[in-house]
Length: 111
Image (cartoon, rainbow, N blue to C red; front, top):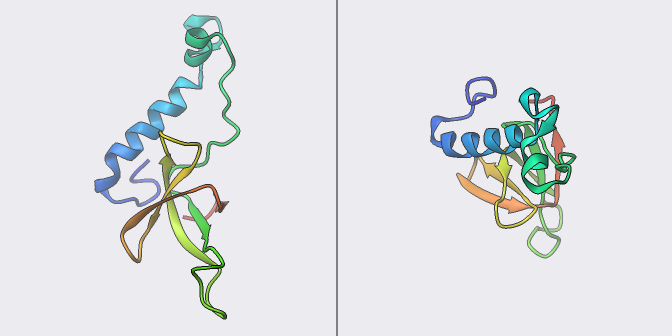
């Protein structure tokens, strides 16, 4: 995943966490076509919020913090889901900071 989306090696842990989360939601043949989470918790996993690791996302800048004619979004890279909340971890390449937000629009085809 890191090589395919040209993501730096320092995000290896985030890639491993994202891959583990995806694999837990996949169907397993020896469990008679059940996902691991379904077998463990006896309910179907919700995977509608999953996005491609390393894809581009545009994070909304709140109205209170932006300037009058300034940008309304920041172009960031998707680094997976946040463990504490149902939010996305986004890497801002300009400031080298991780932004945790739900207010993001993804372009999964762009690298």
